[in-house]
Length: 357
Image (cartoon, rainbow, N blue to C red):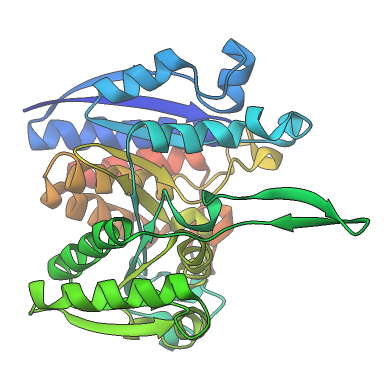
């Protein structure tokens, strides 16, 4: 089997964590008998510096030609004074749109003996393993009309939350299918008691449930869902929700793992996937070998599962990460009795664990 991957390291710690993830990508591909073709291209601030555009057209074309994209992180204070449409984050939004990626999958789970790294009680999080399925291209982030106007001498900002039936059905199907591959329990999150768009969301998701009779469907208001993720995360297996709610809830789920540096993600569409850590570019620690590369490494595991149809390799990477964490930690997840390591050494350790089997 042959697969092509576009590597877009981005900004800040992006190149560091991506470098370690590529080591794991290559090692796991060798073990799986997979031939890889890798190409690197800039995105975000790096692309602004190189080409004056956070996503140059030629980079998008390379992404469209690849089987998968591995992205580091984008953004940083040096570009904060640029107009909104020219900032690094627009490159991320543009590549998602250009690739037709509408579903974002964010797992949050305990790897090995990491329960003690969480700020929540170990008995609450130990054994937690949930997946947030977030709609990525609709909702209030994209709805029109939007803007800032002046009314009665005062400025007023406004945004519009919109979802149509097709958009809801599309993401709900991903939620049901994801639940089928896990423990067949799906929680659909909305605010149907006060929002008409959520009332439609609940109606459409409910109507789809008979297509998946093995999946137990539960509806939950977003405020309750936020509480349950912190209060009883083991209660939730797979969660599907809209763009705004998913953005917030997936970051709340970071509390389960103890560090946002442990959260991978996959953005999926029709036939392509973009894989990236949930964390940002952390420019304050860039170049200091302090970054945690595990979220990016675990994103590579998701690439094997969702883009290459090799779920056993995702499992292999997860086991390797758990084995390494038994003895070694980066600074953000450091615990008593563990050996501190930097970004590069952590990547090497995961590769060594993979090769040991």
